[in-house]
Length: 417
Image 1: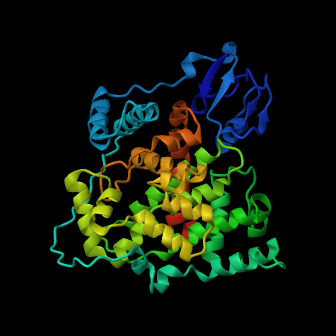
Image 2: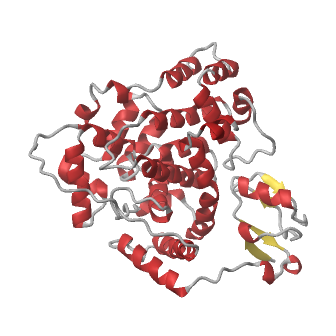
Image 3: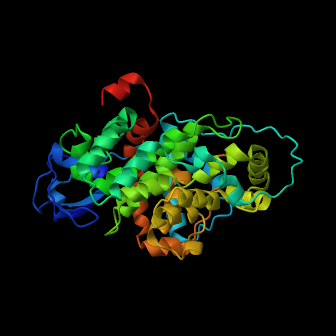
């Protein structure tokens, strides 16, 4: 028997043991010969490896890429700067460095150009007045009010007369939201065998609460426009957020009893507080970004030094203003400091997902320094570091499809899905 990563599985290989999802759902029986349709199903259900009978495995099919040694050198130099100050004696962090090194070297070998931070010119800010987190939220109607369509969905859900048909009717009246939701449920994230062509069918398959949670994420992404480009690139911001959401969802898929949709949205919205700071106090926030770069410290620490609060705290206040669930509020507020939330599993997952997204993504969000890992958060999740390699591959497979769902506004894409 030999254990094979999903990307190296081939048609004709024979299973040496029953194949089940990370949550225990049975997929294929021991002795089954893998077919093309099986391989697609395995990826969609989050299966990262399978036990194969030795005689059906041909080492020549295990495509190990021959990477130029120079690509490894360039990748290591870049990552060493990012991992400066990170405890590489920690087993999870050591494995993360190893896997991200392999991942980045592979991409460089294929022509990927290393990302660079955009320049932010220094400007004098004489305003020393201290602004409380509550002041940043208070009076900002545009930020404190969710889109009407989401509000109507929640009101309907809270009504004793609510039904899935009523929810479907509300969503269907917002053409952009309904199109994006259909694109999402038809994406590789779910891998349904046949196309879902109606919101009501999506609700039947996913559930009302799950689809409503996804509607929240799509609605929030649409809210934030016209941000100061000098400080933040919104495409880069949302790509990082989507990557964090995907890592959170994949981590959740390995734990029983968690809503993967809720974890995806928790990851998607984890940095929402940054957008409020950029919009409301751009000059002060610029000082925090520059301090992070000059002192080589994570951005959240620079925010505390300059603003006496950080984006996680601001995001949690906004989540409470929006009356989001306690779990989502904790994920947003505790994604850098899960200890403050007493280490609930979902918050720990978003905390780790944020680090994975920063490490394995193309996006540099304002600073090059990685957020710190709280070791107890990783212990709370209770997974082996060996899962990181397959997980990075899985998120890579999903990423561009999900970015297209949230960020692509071209008419032909919107109309053909």
